[in-house]
Length: 329
Image (cartoon, helix red, strand yellow):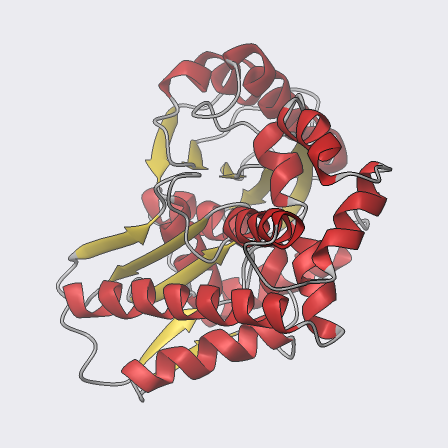
């Protein structure tokens, strides 16, 4: 529970499938966290986004044991400007200031606890984000479903298309076909189209089909492995381009990764593929496990905005208090 004389901030990480929030006091104590559905107003109606933000804030507040919340700063990591959801944030958090942050910045700060470096987001969408010592910023990919190369959505799109091609004779056989038919309970691939395209949350549900590709790849399916290899090359390309834009490619640099559902395990096949492909372009580049998740990165940026330094002691307090929180149900 926060002491009355301690300033508190709230950080948000708003992605294609969920909205995460954490409350942190000025000494680095993580007081509570909460989760809601997607709050990305690029892809969902405002009323649904408002419900997601409210739930995330209220869950964090209740966990913190705070009766009435008044945060000094709310730092919101999301691609669209948070202006439409600002009223709901202010109503439930009492925020004096709302900062709009890019998701990639939250990932980099949380992952490296630094203001310089690169980050990779690879979940429903994909983003390469970086900042150099001069303060210059670059962002690559993050174009939504039309782009987002190497993301869960992109892998799913390529996998489903490979199944379509295999079914109508244009492409090689792949086990993705049977997995897709089984998932939808169909015998004819043409019958998959209606439930596939009429999902009420098409982007989220379609992206989840990436697991059919990753499962097939782990079983030795050549088509699935080829998809993952091509996607890994695309991710490496946009990360290297981000570094080159910042004139960082000629020397060693760190990329905060993994973040996002696809890269939770650094020993997993796809992570190794990306690392390998990136090092072909920039031998000194290194993907590293993040110190914190992007939502904590957002909170750290909020603390910086009120003059709190990211000292080793503060970072240690964040780690310890975060680990002490109740597990997510």
